[in-house]
Length: 78
Image (cartoon, rainbow, N blue to C red; front, side, top):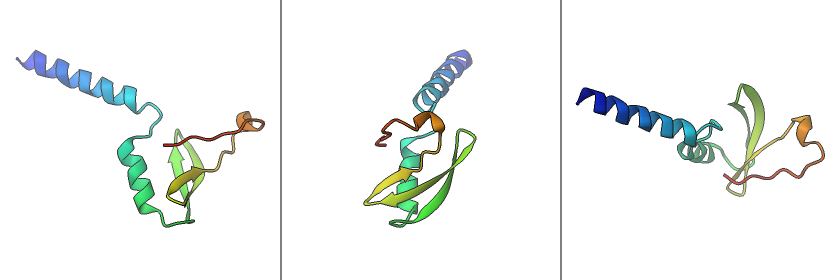
């Protein structure tokens, strides 16, 4: 029985890692949206990088500073 519980736990952990590999979770994004005031700037740490974020009209925006996106239109809804 102990082996079965451990296997279920490992599957649960693997599922979490698969669904949050971008280091963003629904709970985390919802907390960000609730914690920011409209048009407030904040520093966001994700994937070992600091970025600037702000809340505008209920949407959290992230300032993209990666040169790899220099000539691309970047938009992602969370």
